[in-house]
Length: 501
Image (cartoon, rainbow, N blue to C red; front, side, top):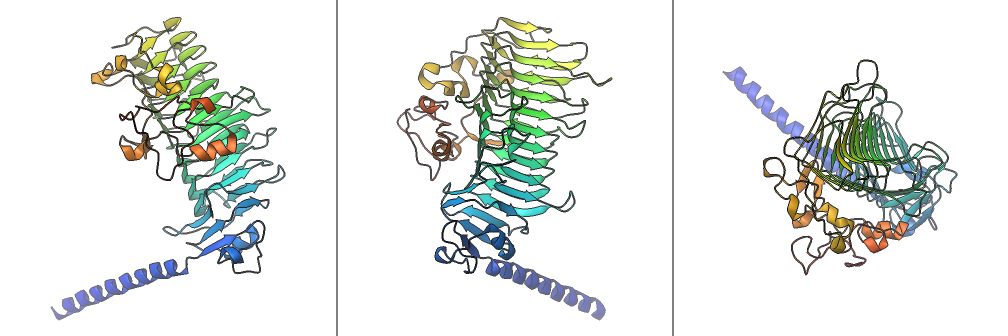
């Protein structure tokens, strides 16, 4: 009994000591965390960096001073030195690089260097726990935001413009990286892709905007999970710049990398306008891609297909709105690689409107073993079906989208003729009015998607509005969209340009 009592006392003391050790470590880390400043005009590396008047001058010097939990504020102006991140934070204490004033700090590669780079040593030696916020990167000699072998890194309110137009390069490039969040970011200008996730896992791109302009290459994408799995795109928008060369091929392309990756990706509440094929699931080698899911997405004015499925098992496509696809609203054709040309897919509760050719076109139906479609509305096509026939619950009614009032924004709402007409009383077509967060749609006033959260920043940097049709965006007006005809709410901290133009 005495021995047992002593053991219990010892365990209690041990646990108490462990608690205080852990507590002291946390307190020490928080106490050691510091805020530093860097100034592109008046900074000096000989100063302490601890205030705006004693700011450092170079990123290379700052990189030698920063430790876990520290924040480096970039003061207003243009930095011509590359921001090359070579250090890591720790869980709960990331290293942060942040514009002192949102969007007012620019890192310019001047077409001779990469503005931002962060590359770990290998697949097993990642750089980790870094946050980047509010900075503009532009004019690269390669990728604009260039990353490889990174983990638990966040990019928030970051914009990037103009990768090298002559190379196979990207504005936001993520390579062999995991657990990345890209939120409220913008990409634009030249480059083969706007956002690329190559051989990555668990990447979330949320409320990201791509304005593709031009490249000297023929294969182009807005957002490209390439050999990537378990990635999530939420409320992302891709547009072809009206001043560009009109050659963007795919809005969102999910593809394997020689039979590796390309599975369990989710695309929710996204919009693609004026691409060749706005949404595409494809394969380079095999049909092993599985479990990709699309929901509440909108395709506008595709030069070819609204969505094309060329690979994949258990691919779900729900509540699409596809408008004015030049050829097919939906095309399904298995890619044949040996004996693997078997394709399974499911499309339902979708609104397919006014495509120049066929509504649903199934090619090589011998190889397409398990594609089913049901409860869709097909209206205004030359032919509703090719290689297939009407599925269960499919209808053909005029949805009467109110484009005269709302412009293209009308296609982001479910019109009255399509309400309750889908499977088990569901609506037909997409609704893209509220925000998805981690796969959940939050339909409340705090999560309104419009006006676009980065509206002012993007308009100032590109001259294109995401929101307002008169400036290149989607909506003629938002009046009445959220139920109150006299009030248009904006996200916290947002400054509206104009509520009716």
